[in-house]
Image (cartoon, rainbow, N blue to C red; front, side):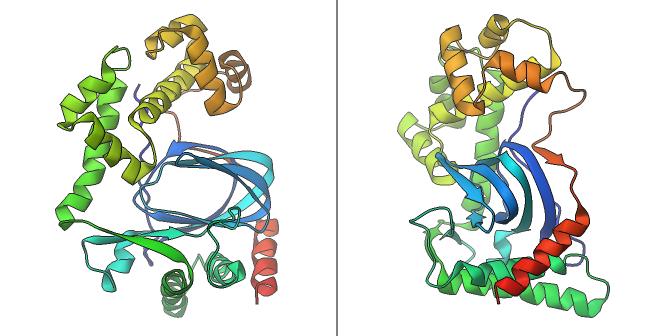
Length: 309
């Protein structure tokens, strides 16, 4: 079974976004086309963002940019609001060959906007409160709030604009990245995997390095090791093969290297991971969600809405 870190997001039928409240146990490293705005309503969790790791706590707000690899892991019982929206919403004010990269993260000292974070929190939680429209007026209001959020991001946050030579090149970035992932998944035991990957995608090592860094923040080695660890996690859950066997199957020549890389990625050893996770049936899922009190979630949204005023 192959592991894919691409997540396809389905938007609401009445507006171009996906808005939901959830309690997260874990979210494996993944990426998607959408921007992802997260407000921590309760508790805390770690956010792996490209090569950075942040602890995001109650009241924090973070924007995950389009096509950036990221993942979450629970620290303290949490509730989070997610607002996911596609880059195409910005095309009305941008050349179609451009894309914004926003810097908005209240857990980082270097990603502070030109206004208070509460401005973004207020709009986000109102979107959360209105996420289930009941009539045409509700639909119009939630669409207007989405554009208000975009306007605030463009006006108040710091950002870079990346220029692509043509729209096809922008869209083909994702296809190229998926091809690279598929090749790595199918050739984990190849001792010359880095060189073979470059040959497969038709890029020099230096060009492929720049390509991966620009869209994911990962180096070639980062990508290969991440996919190897994800394959190991699946095998640990779904088989009784020895750790030594799994290490070899996932392309690690030395078991000590496998232990070190696995613990760096998951904070536990392979044996501890197997003991905690047990066996699972079916396909692996990107997210691990927990049950939560929906009345509490709605109360927290209202609290943040009125406190942010």
